[in-house]
Amino acid sequence: MRLYNTMSKSKEEFIPLKEGKVSMYVCGPTVYNFIHIGNARPMIVFDTVRRYFEYKGYEVNYVSNFTDVDDKIIKKAIEEGVSTDEISQRYIAECKKDMEGMNIKPATTHPLATQEICGMVDMIQELVDKGYAYNKNGTVYFRTRQFKEYGKLSHKNLDDLRTGERSLLVSGQDEKEDPLDFVLWKPKKEGEPAWDSPWSDGRPGWHIECSVMSKKYLGEQIDIHAGGEDLVFPHHENEIAQSEAANGKDFAKYWLHNAFLNIDNRKMSKSLGNFFTVREISEKYDLQVLRFFMLSAHYRSPLNFSADLMESSKTGLERILTAVSNVRFLLENATVEAMTDAEKEAFAKTTEFVAGFEKAMDDDFNTADAIAAIFDLVRYMNTTATGESSKEYLQGLLHVITKLTDVLGIIVEKEEELLAEDIESLIEERQQARKDKNFARADEIRDELLAKGIVLEDTREGVKWKKA
Ligand code: AMP
Ligand code: ZN
Image (cartoon, rainbow, N blue to C red):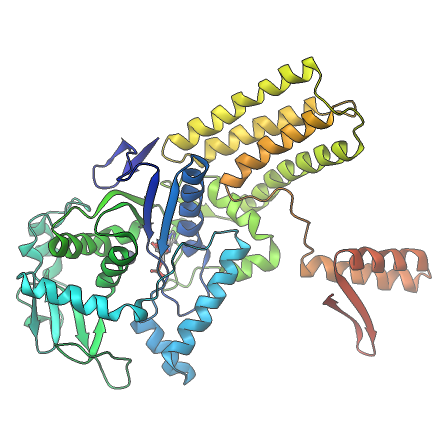
């Protein structure tokens, strides 16, 4: 299995630190709003990476944090006149709902930054003791030049950085020994959440959070550290400096970064205002379509979001789901139990599709090619499964396709859930049928909805519906 390591800028063979185990840390979102579909890209991509390791028989310890203390959270809390905790708890709950919709497995641990402050104070103290950090008026800075390998992940040269940084010098920054130094701890401002520390009542910087949570839940050395490509610099570069300076060991063996999800070829982001939330997309599409769309491109290629691409992902996904439901139908009606010799031969051929899928995934998780292998299997299912097929053959096909689609987190045997707009249009059709005195059709629609768990109520304001 080969994966592209941002550190070496090349594909490397995956060799785990401990045989049969993978420890993986994925930087999670800052929770001050609903997540947008750009944030969903690393979630879907690295959940798929995790699933593939599990498919290969590895035990994966997957840690992904929520950053629940941050300027943006504080700003939102002030706007709403509520506590920062209320904001972060609310959006963690909403994020988890979206993750469930996208069939993203809960992490082994989802640590919260605010629950780990003690560990952060300890690591900062260690860095101060070792001469890697200093306190100026209650703010603690990391002494960047002290860490000789700074820049090794982002392949940046310190002197180039310094020239670039000079223009970024703003008031209050001159207390730093060097413009390259970054904040580990900052004193509170009026009304901000704060914790005790030897330097000031305050809160940690963002980078130290991940160094500490990764160490606590996965140890000083981990196999994989991942996130979006905007995190390479400075976030991950700073994490490396902190962790390696404190622990005296290499931090992560493999650094994986996904490319951006763009819209009109610009990065989708909250600050540009050009984003869709996962929740908005869920009103129009089953979130499986979004997942399928994200995996239709390689994770290191930029992906442009468009209605057309979503529609073609929907069609592609439906092709798979239809093939599965046809085989299921044939299975329910099949009369022959065991595979014939000819079927055994036909079934043996499915290993070719599995091999194609694994070859693609082994090559730096090439989900685009893995999906192509699934489509080949679908075509094969459509042509070889017939009314004469045995139960054993049909079950075998279902088993193979489910095993592969599971890796992508696509559920092929889910009961189809009706979307709000489909329900509304069925209700409209029923009203029309009643007007036309076609009561049989009106009743049929009521029953069809009931079978899908939707109850209709005739009220004075019109027809209302609810989930049974
Ligand atoms: P944030 O909440 O901004 O820290 O982002 C959480 C995660 O989403 C990080 O791994 C980011 O790199 C990633 N991310 C944010 N925007 C995008 C985007 N448009 N495309 C891909 N990944 C993104
Ligand atoms: Zn992080």
